[in-house]
Image 1 (tube, rainbow, N blue to C red):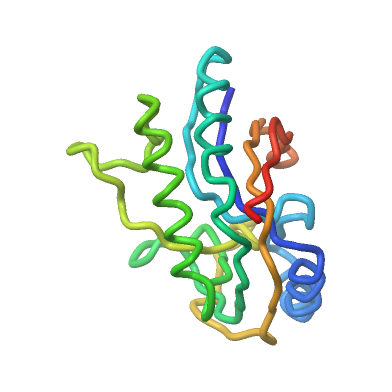
Image 2: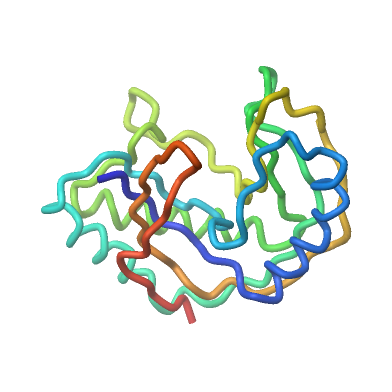
Length: 185
């Protein structure tokens, strides 16, 4: 099963983000917009795992309890990957990004302590590629993503839940199932 650990935005943040994206959704209907229930910040992508590895993954996530809630402000949209044809439109953070990156580092450390490596997120040396806190809001549709960088109305809110997800890739888009949820508070 494909597994990742993510930070979930609170309802206030999600609602603000959806309001900010509405004009873009109308202007760019050919993008594949991420549904509200799939909006998250991936902290660690583990890729395909055997079910037997799931318990240590949950332990690694649970070990971050008490890290504290993260207050974040998002405003800048940008495309990924950089310097190539973009296939993702993402929201970056003007506040809280460093705290999110720190949490991702703690998760990575907790996973490594349990002998679990990140699927596709490591260099051949075993070191982690640089982490860029973001929320994927749209993917390339029938046409290329044409937004290179744009600001939307500031989106502010609190992130308190850390979730271990199973990801199933379906023709109509990914389906995420929460396997475990932990509070960072």
